[in-house]
Image 1 (cartoon, helix red, strand yellow):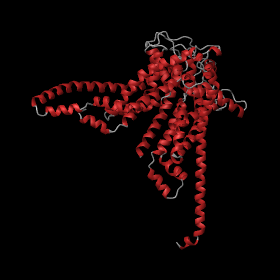
Image 2 (cartoon, one colour; image 1 turned 90 degrees about the horizontal axis):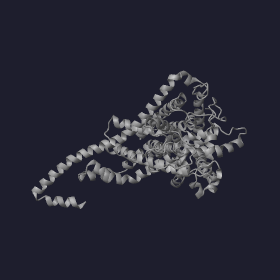
Image 3 (cartoon, chains in turn red, yellow; image 1 turned 180 degrees about the vertical axis):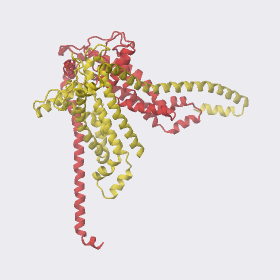
Image 4 (cartoon, one colour; image 1 turned 90 degrees about the vertical axis):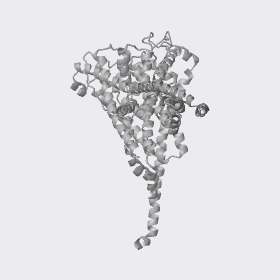
Amino acid sequence: MSAASSHAPDSVREIRQLIARHKRWDYIFVTIGLVCLMVGVIAFTALFLSMLIQGAPRLSLDFFTSFPSRKAEMAGILSAWVGSVLVMLVTALAAVPLGVAAGVYLEEYAPKNWVTDIIEINVTNLAGVPSIIYGLLALGVFVYGLDLGRSILSAGLTLALLILPVVIVATREAIRAIPVGIREGAYALGATKWQTTRDHILPYSSAGILTGIIIGLARAIGETAPIITIGALTFIAFLPPAPLTTQPPFNRQRFPDPIFLTKAPSSWRQGSVSLTTRAVPVSPM
Amino acid sequence: MRDPISSISVTYDSESHAAALAASGLRRGHASRLKERAIEFTLFLAALSSVLTTIAIVVILVEESYQFFRQVPLSGFLFGTEWTPLFAEPKYGILPLLTGTLVSSGIALLVAVPMGTIIAIYLSEFASFRARESAKPFLELLAGIPTVVYGYFALLFVTPILQRIIPGLSGFNLLSAGLVMGIMIIPYVSSICEDAMRAVPMAMREGSYAMGATRLQTALRVVTPAATSGIAAAYTLGISRAVGETMVLAIAAGNQPNFTANPLEPAQTITAYIVSVSLGDLPHGGVGYRTIFAAGLTLFIVTLFFNLIGHAMRRKFREAY
């Protein structure tokens, strides 16, 4: 004790220096953290600006109302966006009821047993399966197995399976956020489980479920690999004869790249008819 | 809402009315129990559809791969160094595709793991509420961009810049594809890491501050070790994401099955091979057609392995606190 007090001025200075040194590391780390964040922000800005600069001059009404063409000045994305819209319709019609129903079952109905465990583990793992595997699944099941061909229906169902885990997880999270009191209130009035679910659980969780559906559809509309795998035609200069038929009379009709609707610049789309053939050369085959 | 209550109070004093109500209620009860059962079963079938999807994936991949391996020996597939399945003299060695996948995923992880971790530590331990709220939308936007767009970004924006730095760089290469893929995975890694760090109880940080530790010391020596399993889960899921990524590599990496570990050369990954075959016009049922299922099965096994580990670790950190 006495030894410590005799060195007091010294050790206080040392401790102050120590603290200052460690505080300096704090600042250094904050700088590094900000730099890393900036890399993400800059990458996003660069991506967005390069799209905007190259793409904006090409965006015109004609671009959306003309078919792809080998001549750049005449080319448009009519068949692409019509195809995207139709595929999204099929996807939404298939994935939303199935996903919401599965989510409701897992949250409200499922007993605690091994079947439920398997379903839960399965949903988490499905979410991690690479999208191209869904393409192979669709190639085997929809295109050849069920003989749906390379149709809008095949593409839509493929993407529906792909976003099913997203919808299920979003539904479950939205339902989990509902206080137990609401369920108990409904049961106390004599409501059955389904009445409770239909009249209370679903309306209360609808906002969260809708968010999940939108995120899922946004992912589906940007998904490319599985669509290519089920046998993409990358150059289509006609529209499906009957846009609202769900059976595939318009076989071999599909959309090239759904993305371009929302995010890719027009010029990249323009390039992609030729670029995909260049970027994915036939040489190794 | 008022109706049932008032009717109950009315029927309370007229006994016969109450009996009639009870009887009709019972009849309705029987019918509605059946209906309840039917609804529960329908919902169960919907939940089961996800299991059916997995089973269908496994059946399709295994069946077609089985047909493939009846014609191609397994050893040649696993250890062959040439992948020329569509040549006149086909060779089916998966190694070139595996090295392509490994190198590109490696580059992506070299970008995504340190940056994702640092961003997560910064956001969870250092950033003010406002900084966090303004940074997160950008990360979410990065995560929401379709991968095709990243592919053309790598090919048309990043590669030309890299070519200025590294002269003689091929127009298609693993480096730019891997770097862009890394940026793509950053939000994924950082959000899971951040979740894990946020789950560490405040009391542990307070204890550390009380001992005189600085923020960085607390972050690195208290929070990070406590969140290890969650951070490891983020890395494993990031690996699986990188291995399964398709479009960036199909567009920017060149699609040449090169048996090389040099990231400056063009190469092909398992996923890009599947895409390039699908873009051609292969007859259904041939060996060439089955190669994509054999390649797909390899990919599925690799990603499933990482996913299972990742989710198991993620569950562990959720249980810990």
